[in-house]
Image (cartoon, rainbow, N blue to C red; front, top):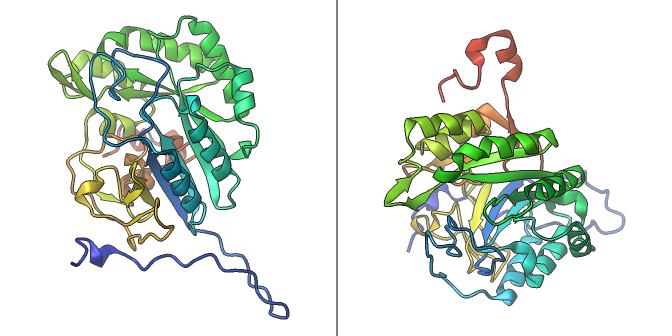
Length: 348
C-alpha cells in the first residue's frame, strides 16, 4: 500500500561514511543536517501529585497509561538515535519525573556521549538536591545538557530555596523554568517569575491546556486572564500558538523534526497517528524523512516543542541556545529603529 505522504518523503539519509582507506585523499568533513526530536516515553512514576497534572498523577485529570514502560525498548531507541546521520537536538519527555528512573538516566547518559548528539533536553521538577544531581550527571557530556524545570508551588514547601537551586543550575547549564498558568495561580505567577528573573533565570509561561471546572482551557480564559498571561508570556509566538491556539501553516515536521512515541514509532509530530510512520527506532535506525516542509493539516499546535518547527516561526525567530524553546525575535534591530517592526505589532 502506498504511503499516504509518499510524494513528500525523501530517500533515507545516507549512512555515516567510514574513514577512507590508506592512500586515498581525505574528504572535507560534512556537517550533519539538524534534526529536532521530541521523544515521549511512557515512564509513569512521579514524586509529586499536583492537582492540575494532565499526566494523570493529580486529582483534576486522570489519564490511563497507553502502554507499559519497557526499559529495554527505551535503550534500543536511544541506541538507534545515536546511529542517525543527523545533528540531534532531543527532548526526552516522561509521564512523571525523569530523574527518579535509573533506566532513563542511564540511557540519556550514554546518548550524551554520542558524536551526533548536539543537545540533550531534560525535564525535571528539580526536587532532588544539588549533590544528588551532581552524582546523577557523572559520565554525562554536560556541555550538551539543556534543562527545563517545572515549578509546582503547591507541592514545593520552600519557594526561595527552590529558586536558589534554579539559579545554581542556570549557572551550570542552558536552563529555564516553566510554570503552568493554572487559572487559580495567575495572581501569583508574576511574583514567582519576577523572583526567578531577578536571579537571572528565564521563565516560560505555559497556558493550561485541558479540562478544569467543566471548562476547557485555554479557550475558557477570560479577557482579564488573557491580559495577565500576555504580560508574562515568553513571546508573541507563544501567545498566538499556546494561548490563542492559532492554526499552523507550513511546518518542518517530518523534515527537520520528528516525534517518537513510547513504542519507538517515528512520525512527523505528536499528532502522528494521522500521518503514518516514518520508521521505528525501537527496531532500526532507518528512518525516511520528507524532503521539505509541508502544510499542517491540524487546527492548532499547542506543544511548545513542536510549534517551533513551523516555517512561520523560523521566519520570525532564531534559536539562541540548546534549549528547544530558547529563541529570540529576528527583527529586534529593525524594531529599535521603527516600532512598526515590533514583535507585537507585526502580522503573526
